[in-house]
Image (cartoon, rainbow, N blue to C red; front, side, top):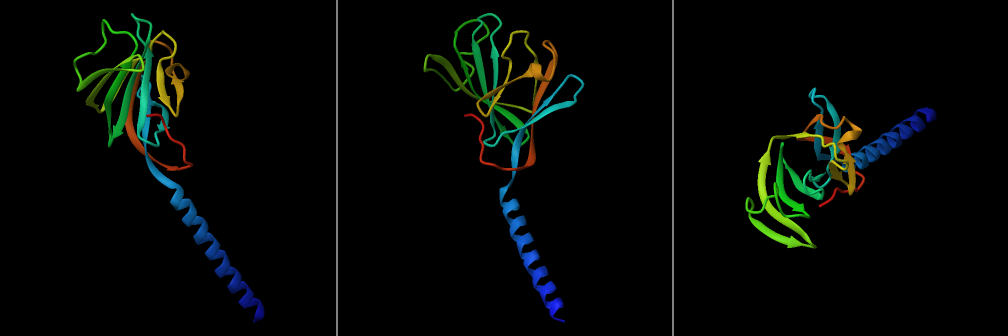
Length: 168
């Protein structure tokens, strides 16, 4: 009879530990926005969690050979372009299509709000074409060859949150 009570106490203690452990895990689980990258066969090659819902499409302009950064945020299942920063004013660069045009830290900045369900892009033969997430440039060529088509879209995923964030 005494052994039964010990087993009952152990069972209650085990259940209590399990409930506490599951509660801690549940508190760390988050549904976060995710950037989905697909190749030309519509196969998902990457799902990048965006803890603050933002990423930067980074490329080197083919004529000016200077950096261009397009700032996006995920809104539901859409990608919203809210800012473009670039180094050289000229052919192919926006100047009047947004809400504000300024110069910040020596770069031209256009503020705007354009929404896309997906963005098809041709991977540049010029290096450094990709997305910046968590202050890290992830080149499209790690998933596909230059001149291939890549499509960016938005989604959500359940993830164990560890406090990291993506760039602003």
